[in-house]
Length: 573
Image 1: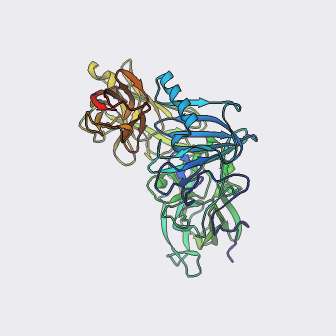
Image 2: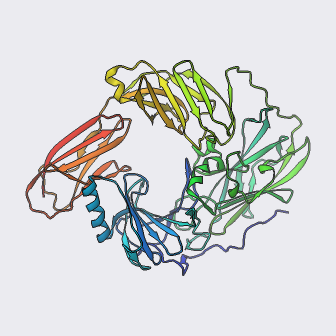
């Protein structure tokens, strides 16, 4: 019999809100684009994304009495954001805003002019901007690392300001009567070498379909062959009423012969554990999957707090011919559940990891700092706890990935990890040495051929005959010089009257190292300019009265390698 483990948490048929907090945005349909704890490469999603019905400018209001403790303006991240502090120590974050309310907007602009900085991070005490529940904070938008209008809404609590699952706590209650879905099942058999390093047999994958009774089953009828020691990986997804977006699940449980041995649960996490999603997920699959890929076992570096039930770290064992029943259950944050049950049988042959015969391979133990060299041209330092599990590494030289025409390759490529899809909790430090012409030294950086096989910027800079960088991006590293400057294209006709648009907009792009700095002056005076990376634009929201006269604009954009482009032109305002 299948063991049903769903918590007594009824699915929500209609949108409601708790009496403790007001809904943060007015006059929207209360639909959602993302939920708490979604696994994204490099971080758990720390809040929920509320749709704004495809438009900007919806009113954002204080969810409770408190005070505005911080406002931020930046090109990436949450863009324009307000931080609301409550008397109990809770912080509520409103991200990707279009603009702040008038007094905050005016203060922010004064500070930008005073500091001559496009980005600001301003903090306030409780007496400066007190607010009551329902009071206007600003307007929803599409700023920062956002690909469409929405509100990123986040609640942090306690001394560690843990990000909390506000749907599970009943603060936000989406419309959701849809059960999560099992998409695929994988099995990984492992063996541990004498030194303690885990080796894996090639992953085995199985198709999953929905049964007539509403549960899920494997398309394979026979018991799955399993080894002496191994674990399962599930690909799962979830939907909500009235939207096409996909969501993560809140909980995954596993039992063997009706005995629970594993549970993953996403209730809350502190900021410093956000990156550990790369250990909770099966990272190599998660990178290219449209689903949540959850490992039903604990890696060395995966925090125990995410596993309320964990027997032998999620490993299952089976002797030859021995049969067991495995039952898996997934639950979304609104209480909808789905189950998958199947039989397994122990293989006759045992998987025994062969000792490495590569004499140049070296162990990298997670708990120790390790240093690696390849002649005089490659050095790497891997700090303690950078890895999520111990592994073998081998410094080696190889071929360089194809690069853009404006990028000059200045060294061979170097690799350290056998698997280029290896996640890192802490960055490793890389140093490459090669003869670099003096004219290119100030533009020299390190590029990496990533898991997609394409060259991408890792960063770094030249000094004393070497280029160094600290990076979490694993792959084949090589020195390049980016020689092409950014491009600037005005999104207005020169000398035209901009009174109707109330903004000065430029399209900007860079071939490789990315836009790093921009300075806009009007008639020789510095003015603040917002960058919207997903749209590739820079905007001056004109903040002075129109006089119908001609003005001279000068925009200077610099990329990550120091290449500089200047545009000059006139407009009427």
